[in-house]
Image 1 (spheres, rainbow, N blue to C red):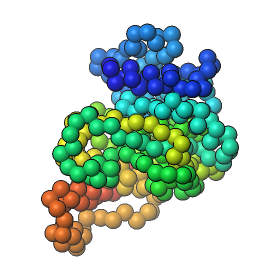
Image 2: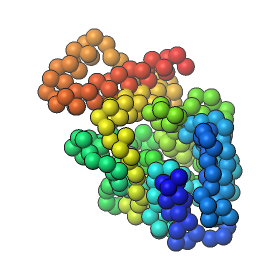
Image 3: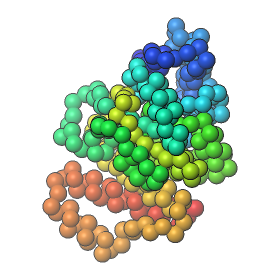
Length: 287
């Protein structure tokens, strides 16, 4: 609850937060149910979504919201005080963008068992300068990731409509202990199909908090496999007929030879990514 209070307080501390702006706390099937922290009940509206899952929670939040600018704030992300102001400015100046995001600066709640580069490569951490945008949904370098994504209401509503009409979309995103994703890029795909682009801007800053259990080697391996799985699955579902590399015997031999040149942790991550892509490709065929 202390972390939830900190996250909510960062929303309440926004420089241009007006009385017409609303803060929705979406409870994604929590047991026990969430409660609004004491002292902010009049400013925060709690919405209960009985079925767990990040995609479901975001769809519910979109449906309950009224604003033209929507900001998704995860339960481990703390917005800089000027986040809302900068988001509005960017969208006003760039009407051709449908979704934007910014820098995710890490805050580790424990020692790092591995060199930091492994966390920066595998977790939702991003530090950069300037601004970068495109209209390619799968261009990672210009794609908002994780909490803090800002979308226009029209984009959010269209994505929510697609989710409600397409069962697999509702299953995207984190749910319980499942380390899967995909909902962010599905939303970006929607924005691009609507004729808009997406981008990242250094002036948008938030702190991404990582508890100690997310700093272990096991977690990095699991999230690497989960992200690779959903990446392959999403591409297969959004682009039927797209080439998805399979883990054939020749591919396994090449992977084995490549792993011989790597450190033990790099070997685990290399195989986890390959296994994740294979799972995603198989699930695409099943769907």
